[in-house]
Image (tube, rainbow, N blue to C red; front, side, top):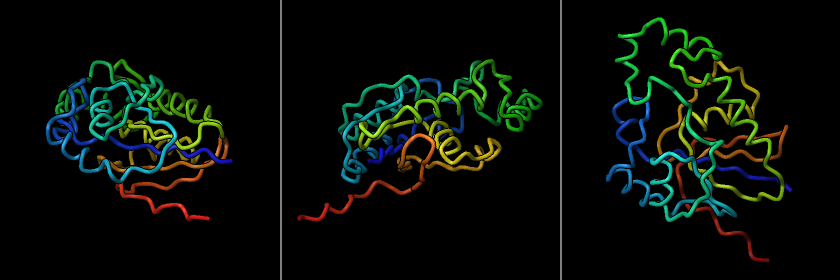
Length: 196
C-alpha cells in the first residue's frame, strides 16, 4: 500500500503579497475568498493536517477542513527577520542575505537554516506509514520546498529554484525512502473512482 501526502500551500496573505517574512498575520479577506473558492477541488483524503501558522489554519478553515495542527510542519523559523521584507533586508544586511541564500547551513537571522528545515520536514515525511492513507496538509511554501528537496534527494541549492504558488497542490506518493512527485496542480475535483 502507498501513502499519499498532498501538500497545499495556503491562500495569499499580506506577508506574501508584500514579499516579507510572515509574522503571524491571519489570512486576509481576499485569501479567505480564494480558499473558499478552491474548496470543491480538494482530493479525497483520510486526514487533514496543517502547520500551526494563522495563515495555514485560516486557509484550512476556509476550505472547510478541521485539521490537526502539526508543529513539525511549521514554516522556516527566520528569527530576527520575522515580519521584514527581503528588499529591506538586502539593503540593510546584504552580506547576511547573500550568505543565507548561498549557504544552506547559514542562519544569520538567528533562526533555522535550510539544512535544519529540510531535516525536520524530511523526518516528518519519512515517518509516514502505509496506514496514514491519504493525507492533506496545509503548509507554507518553504515546507513544500523542503519536502520536495528531501523526497527527491535534490541538492539543497535547488530549494530556492522551486516556486510554490498560493493554493496549489504538491503530491508525494510512496513511502519512506522512495517518493514520487506530482507538483503544482491547482485544486480541481478528482474523477470519481470506477464503480465495480
